[in-house]
Length: 229
Image (tube, rainbow, N blue to C red; front, side, top):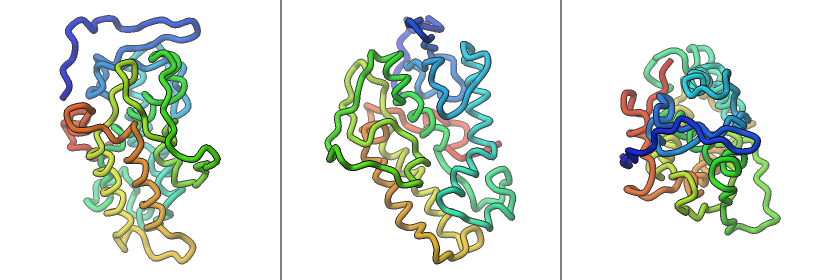
């Protein structure tokens, strides 16, 4: 786990139109303790009061463990068996999504709003063709700002480790491959959707090198990344 600088004591840093809150005391994204989150970063979910990191943690936990997470999954994979067994809210041992919370922490930190407000507008460097747009619905499962590789600079948030992203994808594949949860459906190619999602682990937000990234095991130490209510 990356060391926490002792002088990171300030709870917030104000900008013209927003407040950047330190994640030093966050229970939801503890692995990102050196980072800051803008009060304008509400595209995934909102929290109130929006200048309270505890309120952010509560909203994040409710999002990850609530219906929104299941709906996000079902919009892509359509697994009726998962619904009939209680979705992700029931611990039946075969529908464990790993490191989803860590993925969302990274999504939020690397969002346009957060980069502009708290990191001086640090932008990703696009190494793909400019005319390619990523409009596939499965891409929404891993909402990230960049469709590119991020050039990590000191002014940018620390990326998530690639190994954590891969573990997240592998957990989704385990669920999708289970015939009890995901019966065959000629109208959907779940394997192709998983392969598309796997490319997200090549993006700078999720492709950090060990020792220079946030490991999901450090961000979710009590659950080994397993999604729990």
